Image (tube, rainbow, N blue to C red):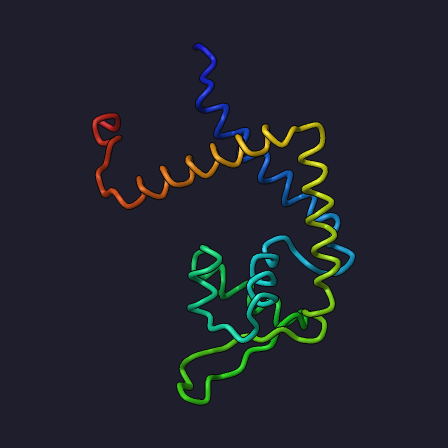
Length: 156
């Protein structure tokens, strides 16, 4: 069977993502911060007091994943949840003092991992890579919007 480069690309991207999370996790473990919490922290550092619905729109994860991450972050004293006084069904999340203080640690870890990833790459390499990755993301998102089942013939 010939080597299938398109499949290798998918595995390479997946492996890169796993290694990235592993590296960040290792750097942040002493501070009890997990890589999956970073997008939520970034959102709350930008705008404190965000509803779960708004967070869901910003971080693009499944709702159960978000709910579990928020519970874990609340348990770890990174954020607190309050009911919206105007709509008690709505939960609003605020950073705690600890959630504010870990910002410098998280930013340092992100900078360190970015520097490691970009080592030896030119500005043009990085620009080209970002453009290609953005284009691939857009194409995947567009395909997700298309309900057509292309592989239906392959299953039979």
